[in-house]
Image (cartoon, rainbow, N blue to C red; front, side, top):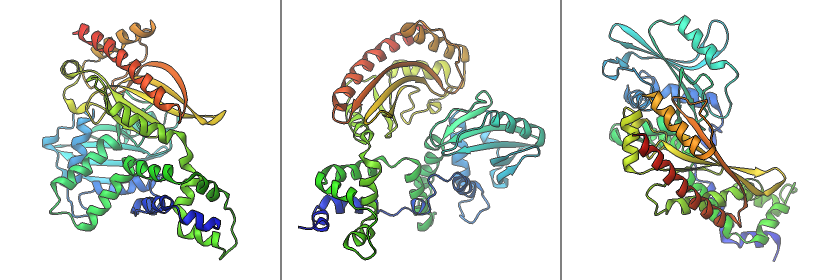
Length: 419
């Protein structure tokens, strides 16, 4: 049997390519990593006078979620959304361009929402402070500053810029729009919006399915695929790569990454926790998150330091959570370094009580006093680092789960004693 026949006779190689070939217009146009394309598309959806014929529907859902995620004082009931002016790449007088500017009439004044959008790039030093000062000098009315990111990067000017994400603002707004306006949206626009949700929600289900086919593909087939390079035009190897380019790229590049298996096992282990204090949250190959505490403590946090349950950073609306960062070991690419942090997510009231919670938790675990509590996100504590391989990860993750179940009980006790 030739090399080509061996590869084609493995049904999982073919299934892998078909799974990865599912069409998405935003993948096809390489939009996922292009910040300016995201900005223009978002600006298009927000503009009530654009050709999408949605009017103010998406704008309203987006503004509501800004309010739910810590952007206070919007006075939603008095906004004249149909007269909103949307400017993409608003030019500042001194230097720089703000990604999006919304100017919304409100009674006899103007509400100005400045949005700085980050997809993969990060903020430059003093960029947000500089933008805020120029906006305040250039425009009248009430100003609100929004730092919108795909990966939940905290703004440097965090006392002035609200930290929101595509996951807690843009995606839920689109999902609500699709649900509530299903009969009035065109079929074409529905497909476009569904594709957009797929790329901003990281598409974990598709990743899992592709990895499943990759795991089932014979090891000798993977080796043969990796050995095919720079084939002559019209050779059997060349034709094979043209017919199955996605499976070739997947096997050669990304998905020998041990973090994929670890992420999958994390979702199984933490998703099946019988401890009511732990709840699986979002996960990707880089970040694994689970929230803690029970209903009584959640109610305390809601009533004590938040005005509504919607201000939580996680989809479950719990706002104390562990984040495990998974990094490839630079000295051994088959080994993964896991580092764990405890976060307090978005709150918007009673900063002194928030400070007290963080201080007591830090003191309990590390004898540290809090020095950098913020009103949006606070990293309360760094926990131990772990090293694992994909083969060892099941054992390591189970041990981590047991450890953090105990930690969550201690944190629960501390919060109860603050009341």
